[in-house]
Length: 248
Image (cartoon, rainbow, N blue to C red):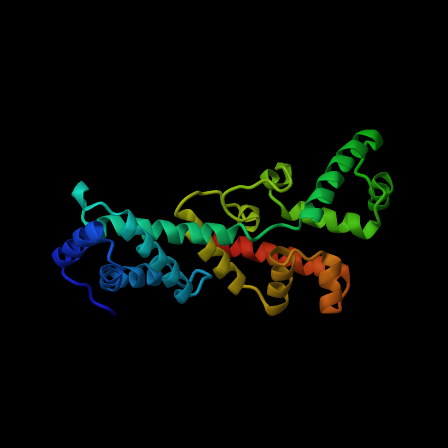
């Protein structure tokens, strides 16, 4: 691992850089403090993001921190730059987590089916059949079945949320019961990775296709050359296994 220049020397270089804005000085300061980026990247690697990506994020934060640092405030540079770099890495994880979305169209249909089901239960004094739900909504029975499976998988909080609403963390993370902000975002990513590792190949394929690629169960069935009901069963088993893994 790269070693750093003595803190006093780094502080001297920083004072000179503030006065001169010499690019060569800036490069020397960056080189002397890249070891911090290495430490931070190692700390957060293995959570679904490669070390090199985290190192790059932390290094860019170092560049920006040098321009913002004010030696006159009496704060040591390492005390200023370390939380800055950690914060950038956290933001990077948070932004990546938002890339995971429950299928938008599927969520909309699931909400419609849920409302129609409640209405028909009142009218019929019993649980409506799939064909009755399909007729009331103008959908195919396959579409209703898929919506029911998605509705069972989604947590109550997620199902009641506005479609497309931005929240902290991924919908898949919320589906599995996590809502902690801040540092918990990293732990959530790690838990999801461990839960995915507990699945077999077909279960991982379904979860990736459904929740990372936003494919419908019908599209997954075509990809895997199986029936839609088989995909539904695999998805249900996979989510149950992930919940058990995280609970353990």
